[in-house]
Structure formats: C-alpha cells, structure tokens
Amino acid sequence: MKLNRRGLIYLGTLGVASAVAKNAFASQAKEVKVADLASISPLKPVSFNYPDEESPAILLDMGKTVYMGVGPKKSIVAYSSLCQHMGCPVNFDSKSRLLVCPCHISIYDPARGGMCVEGPAISRLPRIILKVKGNSIYAVGVSQGIIYGRSSNLGR
Ligand code: FES
Image (tube, rainbow, N blue to C red; front, side):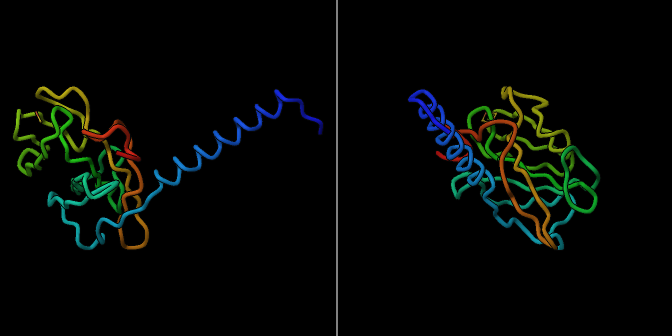
C-alpha cells in the first residue's frame, strides 16, 4: 500500500487516538477489592476509597434488587461519598435508606442510582461500578458524572 503525506497523518492520528483510548480503558478498568460478599450485611455501609485514596466511597447492600445492583440479590451498589454540592461526605441513614449530606442537607437515593431527591445539589452521586468475582466484590470504574473536586475520574 502506497501512502501520501495526508494518509500518513491520518494513520498517525488514529494511532494516537487508539493509544489514548487504551490508556483510558486501562485506568477505568483499575480493580480495587472492596469486601468479601460474606462480610456485607443489608443496610450496613462499607467505606472504601476509589479510584484513589483521596476519593471516599460507600458500598451499600440495600437488601433487595435495586437499579444497577450486583451480587446474589442484585442489591449491592456503591457511590462516591462526596456530596455533589460542595464535597462534604454523605452519611447513610438506615431508617430512611437514604444518603444524607450533613452540610446543607442534600439527600440522595442509593436505590435509584444515587439520584438527588432533595437539597441544593443538582446532580446524582457518581456511581462506582462494581463487579463480583468469586466471593469478593471489586470496584472497577466510575460512571454518571465526575467525583466532586476532580477534573476527571481517572486523574486529579
Ligand atoms: S455540601 Fe452537601 S449539601 Fe452542601
């Protein structure tokens, strides 16, 4: 195959785009073990950090099938625990089954994709993508928005 200058530039661009896409995928696919399934109880939150130590997150077994839930009952979900309003850490209220920010009372529903149901925040909590492997549960990525205080979920 004979290539002119334009063809070489085009192929070079494809190569760069491919490398960028592979890097993004590799970062997104970073796996962090969160807990063993046997150690998770309904409505008892598990704290962890993802995708790095400065990004607190919360895993919850809602006790029944929920949107994007994983595990035997499709009941386990996880979210960034940094409020989308100004970054305060949210707490799980087991009575209401909601995540509540103590700073200005934004309230999020973990059973409905982390949707903000009340308060000044206008977006849902970023969802930590979970995967069950064997008897353990892993965080493998972030979806639906950027974790508060970051410019991207892959880097700082
Ligand atoms: S920081 Fe959470 S409501 Fe303001």
